[in-house]
Length: 147
Length: 147
DNA sequence: TCCTTATTGATAATAATTATCATTATCAGT
DNA sequence: ACTGATAATGATAATTATTATCAATAAGGA
Ligand SMILES: [Zn+2]
Ligand SMILES: [Zn+2]
Ligand SMILES: [Zn+2]
Ligand SMILES: [Zn+2]
Image 1 (cartoon, rainbow over the protein chains, first blue to last red):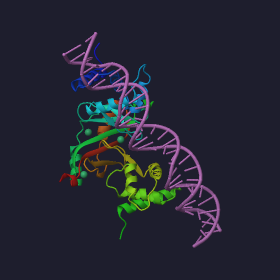
Image 2: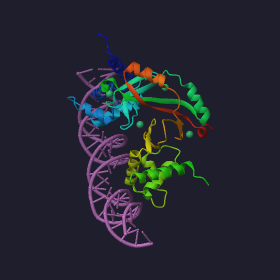
Image 3: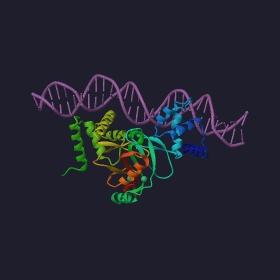
Protein backbone atom coordinates (compact mmCIF):
# COMPACT_ATOMS: atom_id res chain seq x y z
CA UNK A 1 0.00 0.00 0.00
CA UNK A 2 1.75 3.09 -1.21
CA UNK A 3 1.30 6.47 0.49
CA UNK A 4 -1.36 8.80 -0.90
CA UNK A 5 -0.61 12.34 -2.06
CA UNK A 6 -2.04 13.62 1.20
CA UNK A 7 0.17 11.34 3.27
CA UNK A 8 3.21 12.50 1.35
CA UNK A 9 2.34 16.14 1.96
CA UNK A 10 1.71 15.52 5.63
CA UNK A 11 4.99 13.72 6.16
CA UNK A 12 6.93 16.42 4.30
CA UNK A 13 5.23 19.02 6.48
CA UNK A 14 6.23 17.11 9.61
CA UNK A 15 9.79 16.93 8.36
CA UNK A 16 9.74 20.66 7.80
CA UNK A 17 8.53 21.27 11.34
CA UNK A 18 11.26 19.06 12.79
CA UNK A 19 13.95 20.63 10.64
CA UNK A 20 12.95 24.06 11.89
CA UNK A 21 12.85 22.95 15.52
CA UNK A 22 9.07 22.93 15.87
CA UNK A 23 7.45 20.13 17.82
CA UNK A 24 4.86 17.97 16.11
CA UNK A 25 1.97 18.19 18.54
CA UNK A 26 -1.52 16.81 18.42
CA UNK A 27 -3.22 20.18 17.72
CA UNK A 28 -0.80 20.88 14.89
CA UNK A 29 -1.35 17.44 13.40
CA UNK A 30 -5.08 17.94 13.55
CA UNK A 31 -4.88 21.27 11.74
CA UNK A 32 -2.55 19.88 9.09
CA UNK A 33 -4.81 16.88 8.62
CA UNK A 34 -7.86 19.09 8.10
CA UNK A 35 -6.10 21.37 5.63
CA UNK A 36 -4.68 18.57 3.52
CA UNK A 37 -7.97 16.65 3.52
CA UNK A 38 -10.04 19.56 2.29
CA UNK A 39 -11.10 20.09 -1.31
CA UNK A 40 -11.86 23.75 -0.54
CA UNK A 41 -9.79 26.58 0.85
CA UNK A 42 -10.80 26.93 4.49
CA UNK A 43 -10.85 29.91 6.83
CA UNK A 44 -9.35 29.63 10.32
CA UNK A 45 -12.88 29.52 11.71
CA UNK A 46 -13.89 26.75 9.32
CA UNK A 47 -10.84 24.75 10.33
CA UNK A 48 -11.81 25.25 13.95
CA UNK A 49 -15.38 24.12 13.28
CA UNK A 50 -14.16 20.98 11.56
CA UNK A 51 -11.81 20.21 14.43
CA UNK A 52 -14.74 20.28 16.86
CA UNK A 53 -15.99 17.04 15.32
CA UNK A 54 -13.02 15.21 16.79
CA UNK A 55 -13.00 13.66 20.26
CA UNK A 56 -10.26 16.03 21.50
CA UNK A 57 -9.86 19.30 19.66
CA UNK A 58 -7.44 22.25 19.70
CA UNK A 59 -8.25 25.61 21.24
CA UNK A 60 -9.00 28.32 18.72
CA UNK A 61 -5.74 30.06 19.61
CA UNK A 62 -3.76 27.00 18.58
CA UNK A 63 -5.50 26.99 15.23
CA UNK A 64 -4.29 30.53 14.58
CA UNK A 65 -0.82 29.78 15.94
CA UNK A 66 -0.47 26.72 13.75
CA UNK A 67 -1.62 28.57 10.65
CA UNK A 68 0.87 31.36 11.34
CA UNK A 69 3.66 28.82 11.65
CA UNK A 70 2.69 26.93 8.50
CA UNK A 71 2.53 30.15 6.55
CA UNK A 72 5.95 31.29 7.77
CA UNK A 73 7.35 27.93 6.72
CA UNK A 74 5.82 28.53 3.30
CA UNK A 75 3.69 25.40 3.54
CA UNK A 76 0.36 27.14 3.17
CA UNK A 77 -0.91 30.34 1.61
CA UNK A 78 -4.03 32.46 1.53
CA UNK A 79 -6.27 32.01 -1.47
CA UNK A 80 -8.53 34.94 -2.27
CA UNK A 81 -11.97 34.61 -3.74
CA UNK A 82 -14.98 36.82 -4.41
CA UNK A 83 -17.14 36.97 -1.33
CA UNK A 84 -15.55 34.97 1.48
CA UNK A 85 -11.93 35.97 1.22
CA UNK A 86 -8.86 34.35 2.72
CA UNK A 87 -9.03 30.60 2.49
CA UNK A 88 -6.04 28.45 3.49
CA UNK A 89 -4.50 26.23 0.86
CA UNK A 90 -1.29 24.20 0.65
CA UNK A 91 1.58 25.68 -1.31
CA UNK A 92 2.98 23.51 -4.07
CA UNK A 93 6.21 23.70 -6.00
CA UNK A 94 6.55 26.31 -8.69
CA UNK A 95 4.14 28.89 -10.04
CA UNK A 96 0.52 27.84 -9.99
CA UNK A 97 -2.90 29.06 -10.98
CA UNK A 98 -6.14 28.19 -9.25
CA UNK A 99 -9.52 27.06 -10.45
CA UNK A 100 -12.40 27.49 -8.02
CA UNK A 101 -15.99 26.30 -8.23
CA UNK A 102 -18.42 29.11 -7.46
CA UNK A 103 -20.99 26.68 -6.09
CA UNK A 104 -19.07 24.35 -3.80
CA UNK A 105 -15.68 26.03 -3.49
CA UNK A 106 -13.82 22.97 -4.75
CA UNK A 107 -10.34 23.99 -5.87
CA UNK A 108 -7.95 22.68 -8.49
CA UNK A 109 -4.31 23.64 -8.80
CA UNK A 110 -3.09 24.23 -12.34
CA UNK A 111 0.57 24.41 -13.23
CA UNK A 112 1.25 27.95 -14.34
CA UNK A 113 3.22 27.06 -17.42
CA UNK A 114 1.43 29.39 -19.79
CA UNK A 115 3.49 31.93 -21.65
CA UNK A 116 2.37 35.46 -20.95
CA UNK A 117 5.78 37.07 -21.17
CA UNK A 118 4.65 39.02 -24.21
CA UNK A 119 1.65 40.36 -22.41
CA UNK A 120 3.78 41.25 -19.40
CA UNK A 121 6.36 43.18 -21.36
CA UNK A 122 3.60 45.09 -23.11
CA UNK A 123 2.21 46.02 -19.69
CA UNK A 124 5.65 47.05 -18.48
CA UNK A 125 6.11 49.26 -21.52
CA UNK A 126 2.69 50.87 -21.16
CA UNK A 127 2.89 51.55 -17.43
CA UNK A 128 6.56 51.84 -16.49
CA UNK A 129 6.04 49.20 -13.82
CA UNK A 130 8.43 46.31 -13.34
CA UNK A 131 6.31 43.16 -13.02
CA UNK A 132 7.73 40.29 -10.95
CA UNK A 133 4.73 38.13 -10.09
CA UNK A 134 1.12 37.52 -10.95
CA UNK A 135 -1.99 35.74 -9.78
CA UNK A 136 -4.27 34.02 -12.23
CA UNK A 137 -7.44 32.47 -10.90
CA UNK A 138 -10.32 30.95 -12.78
CA UNK A 139 -13.88 30.76 -11.55
CA UNK A 140 -16.62 28.53 -12.79
CA UNK A 141 -18.53 25.36 -12.06
CA UNK A 142 -16.95 22.02 -11.26
CA UNK A 143 -18.09 18.78 -12.86
CA UNK A 144 -19.93 17.76 -9.68
CA UNK A 145 -21.95 20.97 -9.66
CA UNK A 146 -22.63 20.98 -13.41
CA UNK A 147 -25.15 18.12 -13.21
CA UNK B 1 -12.91 73.47 -18.54
CA UNK B 2 -13.96 69.92 -19.27
CA UNK B 3 -14.74 67.43 -16.52
CA UNK B 4 -11.94 65.16 -15.31
CA UNK B 5 -12.21 61.38 -15.32
CA UNK B 6 -12.87 61.49 -11.61
CA UNK B 7 -15.67 64.02 -12.04
CA UNK B 8 -17.25 61.87 -14.70
CA UNK B 9 -17.15 58.81 -12.48
CA UNK B 10 -18.57 60.74 -9.55
CA UNK B 11 -21.45 62.15 -11.55
CA UNK B 12 -22.28 58.74 -13.03
CA UNK B 13 -22.25 57.30 -9.53
CA UNK B 14 -24.65 60.00 -8.35
CA UNK B 15 -26.93 59.25 -11.29
CA UNK B 16 -26.88 55.59 -10.32
CA UNK B 17 -27.86 56.41 -6.73
CA UNK B 18 -30.73 58.60 -7.91
CA UNK B 19 -31.92 56.02 -10.43
CA UNK B 20 -32.06 53.40 -7.70
CA UNK B 21 -33.85 55.69 -5.27
CA UNK B 22 -30.89 56.34 -3.00
CA UNK B 23 -30.37 59.84 -1.65
CA UNK B 24 -27.13 61.62 -2.35
CA UNK B 25 -26.05 62.66 1.12
CA UNK B 26 -22.95 64.37 2.41
CA UNK B 27 -21.41 61.22 4.00
CA UNK B 28 -21.95 59.29 0.78
CA UNK B 29 -20.40 62.04 -1.29
CA UNK B 30 -17.40 62.13 1.00
CA UNK B 31 -16.85 58.39 0.71
CA UNK B 32 -17.25 58.45 -3.07
CA UNK B 33 -14.86 61.38 -3.31
CA UNK B 34 -12.21 59.56 -1.27
CA UNK B 35 -12.51 56.35 -3.28
CA UNK B 36 -12.31 58.03 -6.66
CA UNK B 37 -9.41 60.25 -5.59
CA UNK B 38 -7.23 57.40 -4.38
CA UNK B 39 -4.43 55.80 -6.36
CA UNK B 40 -4.52 52.77 -4.06
CA UNK B 41 -7.26 50.34 -3.09
CA UNK B 42 -8.43 51.42 0.36
CA UNK B 43 -9.90 49.46 3.25
CA UNK B 44 -13.02 50.73 5.03
CA UNK B 45 -10.81 51.78 7.95
CA UNK B 46 -8.45 53.65 5.65
CA UNK B 47 -11.38 55.44 4.07
CA UNK B 48 -12.59 56.38 7.54
CA UNK B 49 -9.14 57.66 8.53
CA UNK B 50 -8.97 59.84 5.42
CA UNK B 51 -12.44 61.21 6.09
CA UNK B 52 -11.31 62.39 9.52
CA UNK B 53 -9.16 65.04 7.85
CA UNK B 54 -12.30 66.85 6.73
CA UNK B 55 -14.11 69.47 8.79
CA UNK B 56 -17.25 67.34 9.15
CA UNK B 57 -16.84 63.61 8.72
CA UNK B 58 -19.13 60.55 8.51
CA UNK B 59 -19.57 58.08 11.34
CA UNK B 60 -17.78 54.79 10.80
CA UNK B 61 -21.13 53.04 10.37
CA UNK B 62 -21.97 55.26 7.41
CA UNK B 63 -18.68 54.34 5.78
CA UNK B 64 -19.62 50.67 5.92
CA UNK B 65 -23.20 51.35 4.83
CA UNK B 66 -22.05 53.41 1.85
CA UNK B 67 -19.56 50.76 0.77
CA UNK B 68 -22.24 48.09 0.98
CA UNK B 69 -24.54 50.18 -1.19
CA UNK B 70 -21.86 50.99 -3.77
CA UNK B 71 -20.92 47.34 -4.02
CA UNK B 72 -24.53 46.25 -4.48
CA UNK B 73 -24.85 48.82 -7.26
CA UNK B 74 -21.77 47.30 -8.85
CA UNK B 75 -19.88 50.58 -8.66
CA UNK B 76 -17.04 49.28 -6.53
CA UNK B 77 -15.40 45.94 -5.92
CA UNK B 78 -12.95 44.35 -3.54
CA UNK B 79 -9.41 44.01 -4.79
CA UNK B 80 -7.31 41.32 -3.16
CA UNK B 81 -3.61 41.49 -2.60
CA UNK B 82 -0.97 39.48 -0.74
CA UNK B 83 -0.85 40.63 2.83
CA UNK B 84 -3.43 43.35 3.45
CA UNK B 85 -6.41 41.97 1.65
CA UNK B 86 -9.62 43.63 0.57
CA UNK B 87 -9.09 47.05 -0.86
CA UNK B 88 -11.95 49.01 -2.42
CA UNK B 89 -11.64 49.99 -6.05
CA UNK B 90 -14.03 51.38 -8.65
CA UNK B 91 -15.49 48.98 -11.18
CA UNK B 92 -14.95 49.93 -14.80
CA UNK B 93 -16.57 48.73 -17.97
CA UNK B 94 -15.64 45.34 -19.33
CA UNK B 95 -13.16 42.78 -18.10
CA UNK B 96 -10.06 44.20 -16.52
CA UNK B 97 -6.80 43.11 -14.98
CA UNK B 98 -4.95 44.90 -12.23
CA UNK B 99 -1.38 45.91 -11.71
CA UNK B 100 -0.34 46.68 -8.15
CA UNK B 101 2.88 48.13 -6.77
CA UNK B 102 4.20 46.06 -3.87
CA UNK B 103 5.84 49.10 -2.28
CA UNK B 104 3.21 51.84 -2.41
CA UNK B 105 0.07 50.00 -3.43
CA UNK B 106 -0.50 52.20 -6.45
CA UNK B 107 -2.89 50.50 -8.84
CA UNK B 108 -3.30 50.52 -12.59
CA UNK B 109 -6.26 49.10 -14.46
CA UNK B 110 -5.40 47.19 -17.62
CA UNK B 111 -7.97 46.31 -20.21
CA UNK B 112 -8.21 42.53 -20.25
CA UNK B 113 -8.04 42.18 -23.99
CA UNK B 114 -5.40 39.49 -24.27
CA UNK B 115 -6.56 36.16 -25.61
CA UNK B 116 -6.45 33.29 -23.16
CA UNK B 117 -9.39 31.37 -24.59
CA UNK B 118 -7.05 28.59 -25.70
CA UNK B 119 -5.61 28.27 -22.24
CA UNK B 120 -9.10 28.26 -20.73
CA UNK B 121 -10.44 25.51 -22.98
CA UNK B 122 -7.38 23.40 -22.19
CA UNK B 123 -8.17 23.84 -18.50
CA UNK B 124 -11.81 22.96 -19.06
CA UNK B 125 -10.80 19.79 -20.88
CA UNK B 126 -8.34 18.76 -18.19
CA UNK B 127 -10.58 19.41 -15.22
CA UNK B 128 -14.18 19.09 -16.38
CA UNK B 129 -14.89 22.54 -14.97
CA UNK B 130 -16.85 25.14 -16.91
CA UNK B 131 -14.88 28.39 -16.60
CA UNK B 132 -16.85 31.64 -16.78
CA UNK B 133 -14.58 34.25 -15.24
CA UNK B 134 -11.02 34.87 -14.17
CA UNK B 135 -8.87 37.25 -12.19
CA UNK B 136 -5.49 38.22 -13.46
CA UNK B 137 -3.41 40.48 -11.25
CA UNK B 138 0.16 41.58 -11.68
CA UNK B 139 2.49 42.57 -8.89
CA UNK B 140 5.66 44.55 -9.14
CA UNK B 141 7.18 47.96 -8.65
CA UNK B 142 5.77 51.17 -10.06
CA UNK B 143 7.92 53.75 -11.79
CA UNK B 144 7.82 56.04 -8.73
CA UNK B 145 9.16 53.29 -6.49
CA UNK B 146 11.77 52.05 -8.98
CA UNK B 147 14.08 55.04 -8.46
C1' DT C 1 12.31 7.53 32.28
C1' DC C 2 13.45 12.26 33.37
C1' DC C 3 14.07 17.10 32.45
C1' DT C 4 13.91 21.22 29.82
C1' DT C 5 11.13 24.23 27.69
C1' DA C 6 8.13 24.80 23.58
C1' DT C 7 3.34 24.57 23.26
C1' DT C 8 -1.26 24.46 24.83
C1' DG C 9 -5.91 25.86 26.65
C1' DA C 10 -8.47 29.22 28.87
C1' DT C 11 -9.39 33.60 28.91
C1' DA C 12 -8.66 38.52 28.60
C1' DA C 13 -7.74 42.26 25.39
C1' DT C 14 -8.00 44.30 21.00
C1' DA C 15 -9.83 45.24 16.47
C1' DA C 16 -13.25 45.05 12.87
C1' DT C 17 -17.89 44.78 11.54
C1' DT C 18 -22.86 44.82 12.20
C1' DA C 19 -27.22 46.10 14.62
C1' DT C 20 -30.19 49.41 17.08
C1' DC C 21 -32.73 53.55 17.46
C1' DA C 22 -33.74 58.35 18.32
C1' DT C 23 -32.55 62.44 15.56
C1' DT C 24 -31.54 64.70 11.17
C1' DA C 25 -31.76 66.03 6.47
C1' DT C 26 -32.92 64.68 1.47
C1' DC C 27 -35.97 65.57 -2.03
C1' DA C 28 -40.72 64.85 -4.20
C1' DG C 29 -44.73 67.35 -4.21
C1' DT C 30 -46.83 71.47 -3.59
C1' DA D 1 -39.12 78.29 -1.50
C1' DC D 2 -41.72 75.48 1.95
C1' DT D 3 -43.45 71.13 3.85
C1' DG D 4 -43.81 66.43 5.04
C1' DA D 5 -42.70 61.60 4.63
C1' DT D 6 -39.12 58.84 5.44
C1' DA D 7 -34.40 57.42 4.10
C1' DA D 8 -30.19 58.07 6.22
C1' DT D 9 -27.23 59.47 9.91
C1' DG D 10 -24.47 59.40 14.30
C1' DA D 11 -23.73 57.43 18.63
C1' DT D 12 -23.25 53.49 20.69
C1' DA D 13 -24.17 48.72 21.90
C1' DA D 14 -23.55 44.02 20.31
C1' DT D 15 -21.24 40.70 17.79
C1' DT D 16 -17.36 38.49 15.59
C1' DA D 17 -12.58 37.70 14.50
C1' DT D 18 -7.96 37.88 15.90
C1' DT D 19 -4.11 38.50 19.12
C1' DA D 20 -1.92 38.53 23.78
C1' DT D 21 -1.18 36.57 28.43
C1' DC D 22 0.18 33.03 31.54
C1' DA D 23 -0.06 28.94 34.40
C1' DA D 24 -0.32 24.02 33.23
C1' DT D 25 0.98 20.40 29.98
C1' DA D 26 3.45 17.41 27.00
C1' DA D 27 7.17 16.72 23.08
C1' DG D 28 11.39 14.89 22.47
C1' DG D 29 16.55 14.87 23.49
C1' DA D 30 19.61 12.89 27.01
ZN1 LIG E 1 -8.51 38.51 -0.63
ZN1 LIG F 1 -18.63 22.63 -7.42
ZN1 LIG G 1 0.86 32.36 -14.21
ZN1 LIG H 1 4.95 52.17 -6.02
